[in-house]
Image 1: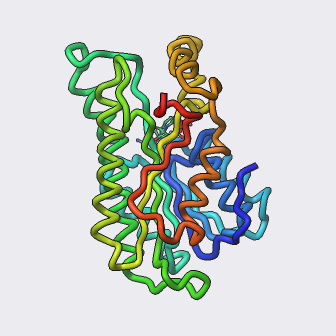
Image 2: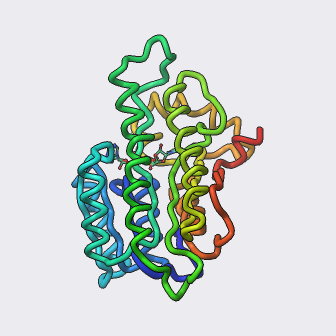
Length: 267
Ligand SMILES: NC(=O)c1ccc[n+]([C@@H]2O[C@H](COP(=O)([O-])OP(=O)(O)OC[C@H]3O[C@@H](n4cnc5c(N)ncnc54)[C@H](O)[C@@H]3O)[C@@H](O)[C@H]2O)c1
């Protein structure tokens, strides 16, 4: 079970928090780590409600704001963050997990513009819109007394495929590489404001994204076997890294892309 030794004071936002994937694991780990003000969003209302229930079963006195919506919609992203900030009067930790893998492995010449736009609108544009809203809100607050050097901390979920390429996934790889370099650039721009911006690059993780069909599981086998640890990671293993980067235990880590990949990218 992912959690952090040091308490996470203040308020958090998690996108892509529905279901049983990385976002849901992060939301639950935040609750286990003492964070009691958590705003969660996902396009899927049913799975989002399940995550809310899971948080409340960890801490029944937690205040959980859950709002379904499309992360690529500027109006939704801005109004969700506005509501979260107004509800909790703060935003200390923001974790951007909403993302899609795309339907199947596909080379550039076979990809339609609709598929390309959907992938980039959710993965890159959604992360960019979320970061913009989070930075705007974090800039409105002073640091908490518990971590006076940290006004806010943002963690984006990129991918090992933002660092290296993979056959049949050019658009996905590029959307994740964009998140990594957006992370670095925002980190440079907001260091003087006491805001840290980092990203985590997961390897193959056992979530609905990778286990939804037998074809997908089969297609991922080579990627699992390339990694020295030769297994899928768990959402909790990613959540542990995310919470560390959120926390003031990572106070001098800025603009970093932390791989959590069983060694995939070193091989
Ligand atoms: N699972 C892996 O192997 C893996 C590896 C590297 C990176 N990632 C990244 O981790 C993140 C989380 O993925 P996961 O593996 O937990 O998969 P997941 O499918 O469980 O989670 C993704 C969530 O994003 C939500 N979502 C999809 N489109 C959305 C939209 N338009 N607006 C709002 N929410 C939307 C989904 O409903 C889902 O709950 C993604 O960004 C993914 O690219 C996953």
